[in-house]
Image (cartoon, rainbow, N blue to C red; front, side):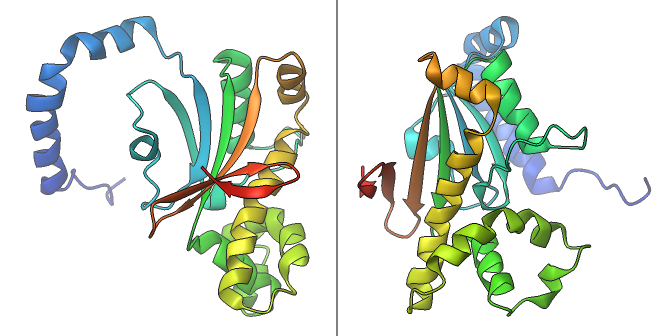
Length: 215
């Protein structure tokens, strides 16, 4: 544990600023959140990318969203094999324990994980093909999407199309979870796919039979 260091000074300073202002001004609300527990309206599955600011995009208050982040906002298929499944565990908790009303898969432009999948599948990133690559094995989830967009001639458009495939594959995989399907069929849960254009501040949502449409 000798490699563990104290918190960087600038983060400590930011914390004290938050505690003296935002927390102090809203202390009753924070205490209520602590005592009552969380009751989020929706689960948002988004990318780890630091540019994707979920709560800012939707103007969400603390406690409103149950947020799970991973590389390229992917959901793996249902696989009850006794192994470690962080994303699947988060989905199970959101649906079975928190009983969220919505699950939103939020993809975005210039996604590094999607670009890595593109390069791996097109033979430009052999290091990602290794069994020891955590990123490569995770991005295997998106391989079927690459097969559907690989013939798009323009590389930028191909990668953008693959970003949206990541959302569609995740939505399809969500529906392979029995408890997700049961909640959807009972009318207690709805699934949504969104894509955020970081540069333009744009947001598109997926509509069956129409594709991705601006919100």
